[in-house]
Length: 361
Image 1 (tube, rainbow, N blue to C red):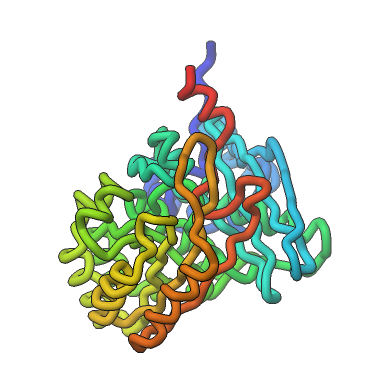
Image 2: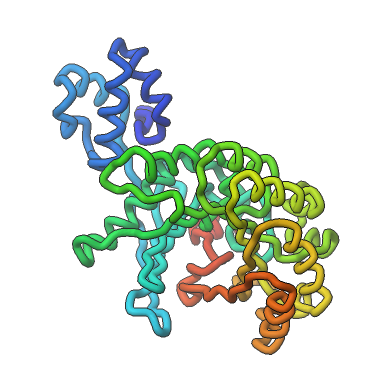
């Protein structure tokens, strides 16, 4: 059986430059090829007419162009919203699967994209974590999700485009930080046909401290969201055992204080309320003490149920009590609506069916 050719979409810009030099071509050819791949979304090397016929032949013999394949599409209408929340299942060239979500709300069109196939952190309330980690996504695969969602929008209504990108899909972005950074470069700084301000891009993390430091030092100026879910160490370890043990609250709090001081932007602290677990007045007090040490805003979110997990969302009165205490402590707090729960597209619900079946076997 013939081995498939390497997918050129997986190469970073620097990899592409090095490849051109090794093929006896000037390094600027990398920029031309990269633009054809990530601006024009070329499906073949023959489309790249700016290149010589000889180079196109050489590239065809050396690489494939293998974009993501749309396998399944689901949508659900949200109350009060004109456009549906949509989820797509995408197949990668090696037959792994990922999910991505399009969230339409408040005149925004947000792409929620994955950074890994599965997730290594195994938080019990999260379907992606229950899959385990299969592998990291390449920068091209991350970028390809955005293209797939943006093309879907444009097909419905020409001229429409994504307004925001959140790295809140499958996986932990800061454990695949090089490829996430490269994808952000593709999507925000190269002045391609799709180009979005970094102010409209959010990276969500469970609190990977080295990654937070690298993000601060990178100068990228994207937004940062941190999934906290408990402001007491033992309780956080019971909810997020691997993440909380590896990145303890005390060190995480210092890291976030350093981050906000360096970048001058607030962090969004995401707190999922779980009935009877992290929703008491004492929990609210501990969260207020933690959050008052750095520049932040707090997003309270409800738990979205996944199969075979017995957590429960809180009652609305409990949520109101929790929010009011934080507001009275001088914190900026919002209750974030979850979109797409009926098609398992909301926070914590992304997991490919094929992967779940594979793990069950």
